[in-house]
Length: 123
Image (cartoon, rainbow, N blue to C red):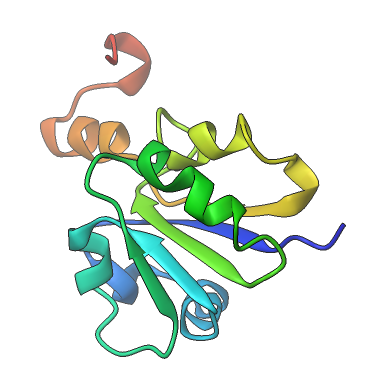
């Protein structure tokens, strides 16, 4: 199966912090999914927008209904570190998804505080 669902992790620097491939996937999406903060990072698009109010779990059925369209989910940091990607991977097969991570919120906080990530408990 050709991947139709792309999950892109975004940092505080927004689209500027993404590579060309991620930005192209966003601008060519048929459907753009994310919270208000992430949706606001994409000023103009012709994509249908699905905005979640209570995490990706609240819109997973709406995403599934668009199987076969080019769906892009925007999320914070590393989508597979307690994030939307991990939740979506419970519902969709790996060959349906492309996941482009960004440093996680945990990595960014540890870097700013000077704490070795391996030495702290993350919850």
